[in-house]
Image (cartoon, rainbow, N blue to C red):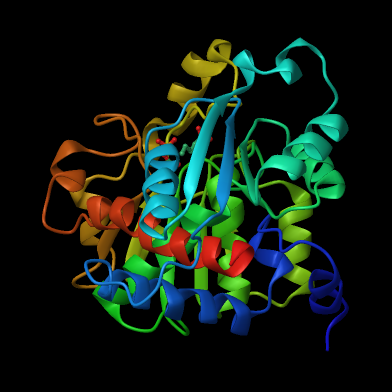
Length: 312
Ligand code: CP
Ligand code: NVA
């Protein structure tokens, strides 16, 4: 038994990052997600009956907020949605005390924050499972939905090539972790200065993940079954960077011409929200290769699997 697994068995089952799990554990979650998807209208049981999830948002959200709330309710549980602005943590109450108090009321806590350190502090002090609803460093729930979506359209992801074009941001970091765990090949094309953090790349290297980084989008998408991008300015980035980022990323827009260089039948993914005319051309995101709304829907199914695993 691995050290990570035995630790998790002793404490709450947090879902913080894909790298904390084995490929087999993540595969089991995807199998469970598919089961929840197939049985949505007639579920055989309500694993979260009598349980409540607190969801704390320090940053805006549409998909994460709605999909988690609906997921909890469809699993028979309840959700309390909180903005940190309305909580005492917004006025300086410590994360540690907040974790201890919430652990007396609820059976799980989701946090969206631009400080991964706060998420990890919450997890250290909570007696209940903590789920990463996005930090400035990662977005693991999103990538579980993305892999589910990929496999629905293109078959088993292991051994296939995917391409990331644009910012080496939080979503890209979780994609890199997924490449290691689900055994697919990932090429990233990022402008100089916007590559994923060295820590993520060093981890991928240590894991012998099939991950390559360059700065040419054409090289990255060559032979790829899926082309993925994301916003050029993330929630954790300063608005002051908008102009310099727009200039640096302009050659990285996913256009129909770029998609034509990918493998025949390649799909296009984007976690949303999207900016047409910036990271992606409207004709791509609104065209036949785009699976972005399947991806959004699959947040619901993937997160049911995560919630049931963590809180049942
Ligand atoms: N993709 C995603 O996490 O969307 P939201 O910011 O709307 O939650
Ligand atoms: N990279 C984006 C993802 C939004 C879901 C951000 O962090 O704003």
